[in-house]
Image (cartoon, rainbow, N blue to C red; front, top):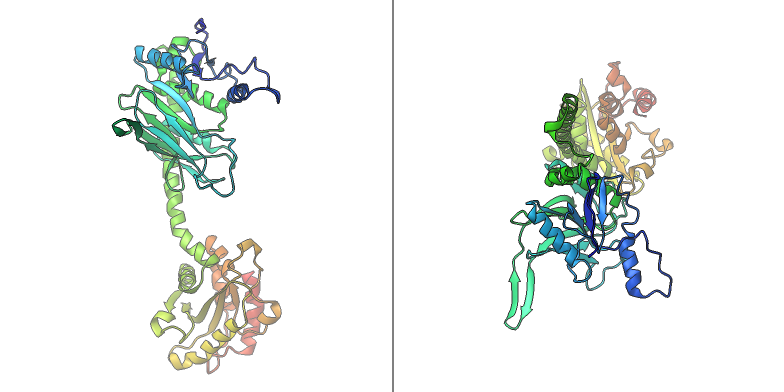
Length: 483
């Protein structure tokens, strides 16, 4: 192994178990497979600005005993095992944890649209001197991942950096498995050692980025997906991981990224303390705001989903919730009188009583929805002779299989609506008013502008029919308000 002179140059030595890519030339088509694989392995690290990030690479064939960390060390004899053991021995002699970054899987594996019978492409990370391994199963493209709350600053910073990867970047769901060995006496299973702490997880809460710590604390592994930005990873290693886990490594080389607090000037101490306080407040505020956002979404989602995509009782309940928020007193007539006997809801506000029919249509709304509300208006005086209605409204979630942006603006064409004695309201409009808490718009759409403004309106004739004069005035003013 070649000797490596060490000096106080401010650069932290880091072991990488490949050959130095700088002198390599890209292999031609006649080059043997071994050399092509060797070039491919080294090329991943060719673009790292080591000095800029305050690090010094120690490739295969160089001394690794003073290295502060290792990237993808190898256990294979003649291909990195000696360098790996010297790195581990050096860390142990100094009483420091061996800090290791390992990648899961292979990013450039061809991903078939249909998984083979042998499963999706995976990966494996084995530990040196400890039982167990971390195995990965490649997730489908554009898998959703999220940051685990409550992490320490170094782990949280790593997770945030990796969240910025391109949407098409690959991820592997990780699990810890036991070590098995077969011999003349059968198969021996040895339970995995250490602790795996998730940093990023997928939608099933499986870790896709994690930190593994051996039981004795001598090894500290960060397992990340293949295809990461290595400039970003080396920057994180020097700025966040080493100060957190191996601060002595920075002191030994007099890294510009580390100053002993005991040697700081008052100005440095004040600035550092202010920065730490800012980060602390940021984490507290972020945690609080994330909780508020989760609570707000939990409250909003049932109404949003029902108004935009729902039907039946789910849609009726959401409409009732919006009307109550707008100030109406709402009665569920299906529950009180029985299904099909009357309209779905009775909404009362400021002396106005409105029959509300709520319907859904996966495509264009049929005119039979109109006739249903008309029949309910005719039957109402027989159901509640002592409670006359002053108006009615038909609320329709039309074309609900389409994205809201792709739906027609109106439930029916103008020529149909102009002949009706009641308004037809798209549930999407109701959602927008509810979302912006525009309660006058909700009231105006359901009751008509004349009712909201307190203007005098003629009472309905016997049988629930709205007089023609009052109806035409409502249609003109009410439609303008609803839009």
